Length: 146
Picture 1 (tube, one colour):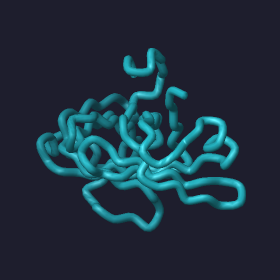
Picture 2 (cartoon, one colour):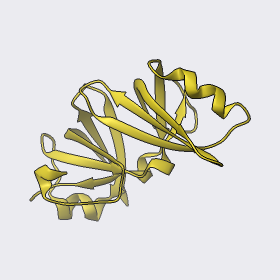
Picture 3 (tube, rainbow, N blue to C red):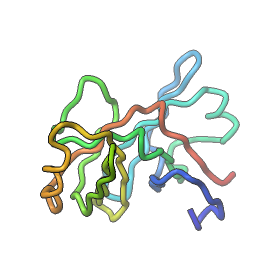
Picture 4 (cartoon, rainbow, N blue to C red):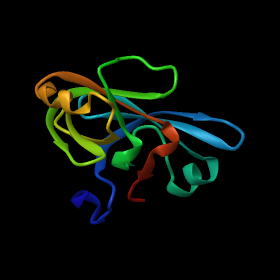
């Protein structure tokens, strides 16, 4: 975020460029290409698109809170509209949750904080494996300089 001189509590700060804006009556779906050529979707109000001056080719940062991200070994989902692949770089466990760090192509890091499943502690051995971050486009906040 130093590029924008803004501090935020959101663990996930992904830099990219807008490649497509799909307009709907009340909201827009913004496609953002990340450094590693993966695409992230953000659903924001049409008013926000206009207020931020969003257009194709504009640089943005996408913010996503860690608890909004679910990590999975599955590359598909009927439930989530964002699925990003990366290499698990670390796993930390506490009493009721685990924190997973995923390194995406292009070098960005993504944090997923998940409640324990029955076999959560056995997932410690996934470091180095390719896994997938799943999250909803309506959990993405876009920031930009005008």
